[in-house]
Image 1 (cartoon, rainbow, N blue to C red):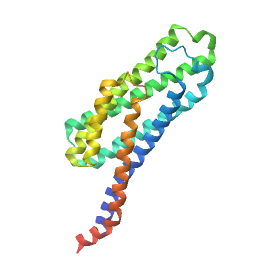
Image 2 (image 1 turned 45 degrees about the horizontal axis):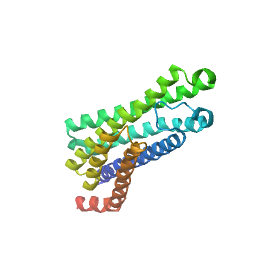
Image 3 (image 1 turned 120 degrees about the vertical axis):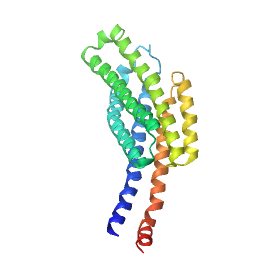
Image 4 (image 1 turned 90 degrees about the horizontal axis):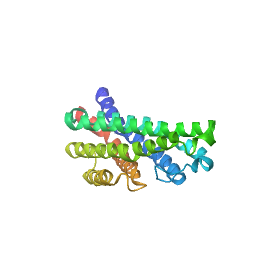
Amino acid sequence: MKQETDLIRSRLKTPRAAAIAGIQFSVLLIAGLLLFRLSVRADPLEAGAWLKTSSNTIALALNLIPFAGIAFLWFIAVLRDRLGELEDRFFATVFLGSGLLFVAMLFASAAMGGGIIIAYGAKPAELLGSPAFTFARAATYEIMNLYAVKMAAVFMISTSTLAIRTRIIARWMSFLGYAFAVFLLLNGRYIEWILMLFPIWVLLISIHILIDNLRRLPQAPERSLGTSI
């Protein structure tokens, strides 16, 4: 009986951990994107006026990114654990690969942005208007708004497909994930705030998993007693 109770508790902790990690990722990424978008124009050829007025704000936004990435990796790991034997190898490969690529591109874009701030602090007069600044700014924009956005869309599609097959989340969230993913795939470079759809979707899933877990928690002892009898 004790072993069975421990097993039920461990299974309940898995979705709760996924929910907490997903909420942390969503809040951190939304905060970072808000700080960044309110300070920098979504134009890869902008002149860099934000370096004079908002470099500290951007530095704060960039410092949130590593913690958001760590939380997202934890979210992926716990979701895979929740899938368990139900995990489809094909979609699981796309799910894991797209998630890892998204984090890698998120980090690469943030690192480029941080490099711009450091270079400006060292030689402000020489950086603005230089080919190095133009390249770094354009590369940061392309990595985030083209490649990272596309990987986020692929992650949403693969996760929604796995969710429909395994029923780990509500079906309407899976269909919402498909809709958001199509929007990201087709409009990633043209709408300034479009990447916000990804953390918002993860936040919805995380809240749903957390509520579902809390509903099941009081039933765990009853199930354990019923099985033992």
